[in-house]
Figure (cartoon, rainbow, N blue to C red):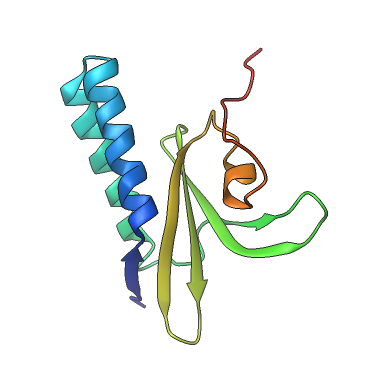
Length: 116
């Protein structure tokens, strides 16, 4: 089964931001290209496996329409799959150190979580 994949402007901007951060702030252009390619590959696998990610639950137990696919341990791809239209809508791409759940649900600034 192959479904239609659409990438939002937010996700596109997120991907550009990740690539730019790695390229310019970390001075690693090859790593930036590799990260971008890995994220795009993961997005495209959603066309064939639209329910491969995990359903996102809100902190109060409500099942949201979103799913999240973790890519290479460092990136969270948030998306929704509509069975009726057979379409996957990629909404955002976050670094896993961000509070992506709060950002996705509009409940936070997305500031990086403290690391132990």
